[in-house]
Amino acid sequence: MADADPLVTAPSLAAQVRNAVIWRSGSQVITQIVSWCSTLIVIRLLAPHDYGLFAMTQVMLMLLSTMNGWGLASALIREEEVSEERLRQALGMLILLNCGLALTQFLAAPLVALWFAQPEVTALLRVQSLLYLAVPFCALPHAILSRRMDFRRPAQVRLVVALAGAGTALTGAFAGWGVWTLVAAPLGMILAEATGMTWAARAPIRPVFRFSGAGQIAGFGGVMTATQLFWFVQSQADVMIAGRVLDTHSLGVYTTGLFLAQLLAAKFVPPINEVAYAAYARRPDLGAAALTATIRLVMLVALPAYAGLAVVAPVLVPVLLGEKWIEIVPLLPILAVAMAMLTLQILFAPATNARGVPLAALRITMLGSVVMPCAFLIGAQWGVAGFAWGWVGGMAVLTGATVTLSGRIVGLRWGGLARAIAPPLAAALAMAAGVALALRWLPPMADLAALTAAVTLGVALYLAALHLIAPERLAEARRFIKSRGESEPAAAV
Image 1: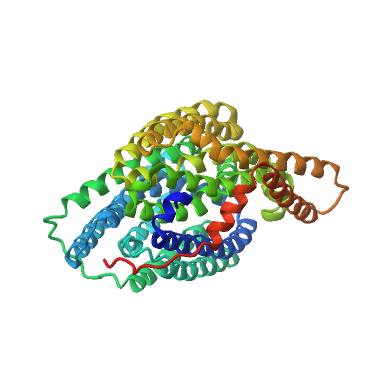
Image 2: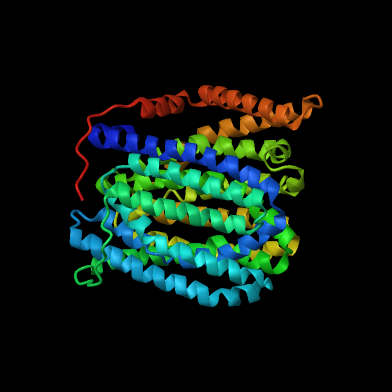
């Protein structure tokens, strides 16, 4: 994404970015609706204990997934020209790497089970090791299509993937598979994605295991992999620590609350970052203007979403998850503050990576790998709520460091960031105050009716407040949605 002025100088890129965002984010909305319909049913059928066990397996899975080669595939996006031979080399690297990861997880599974004192984790992890075998056939097609700025066909594939996952999850939940439901659904999804993405990109399926001349790609991918490794420490330290100090029920409550709070940052911002990285790589000269425009548009939606989540939690959780998850309610306002900072913080990495400075994101995640575990170790003294406050304290430090260090590279200063965020933040806080008062004054009614009234009022209050504070922000969003530009032929791989 880019600011208005820079985009005037590159209308064809502006049109491609607009179309890419609409396809990528629009498809994400549709797939998430499908996914969430099934997820909410599954959450009601399974127990917190099941989610606690599953969270324990995710620590190992997330650790090894940081080394699965997505960074290596992303290096292809920055290349001016990529030959068929280079694509086959990349596929060969990805296959070797992921077969090694699958074997590592299979052999190390008993050690993870021993750490958490849950023997069932061994079998769960060994079955999940099959996930790595499909990764090469997802990562390489993704890179090929991103080079072409083609997000339409991946969007169609992801819809099929969401349907496959929803069908598998519902089948398992109703059949009484318990925690195995949470293992089977991702397996069905990644198999569907690997098949669909390989077909959509017309990607090569015959690898080459001679890697001469591929050093630059491997080097860039290695830095991005190291970044993901430190990101794992930063993002999974809470479960590593909580799994030792909380019982499986409390861990399930915490991780499900975190999942709900992270929905926007984990599901909707990454697709925007995918488009942003591809666009930044093509026009790195746009610099701060492009990043500022991205921040303005993302935070225009994110800030009211988090503020709304914080105030409607008492009626949202019973409606979405059921009364057995009511312990999540006090966690959501705390986590919403942390996730607002996380959403802002993760927008910087695509800009610095596209400028050929992946070490910037690496330094930030190295810092996060120290700050976040320390925050969670401190918070662990106060149980589940302490882990939520650990997110707030850790993200405050990490977001400040990101803006200072990465902003210096891109050319975005604190003053410019404040001007980008202040209007939607003020409107979101005004909206939250109004909705909180309305919920207090509402007569007794069903939770669904109260939630519907709160959401309707919240949308109206936010739009009205933003119109009064900064009407140009609404106009900018409308221009982005309606903008047109001549398309240029997608760059051939």
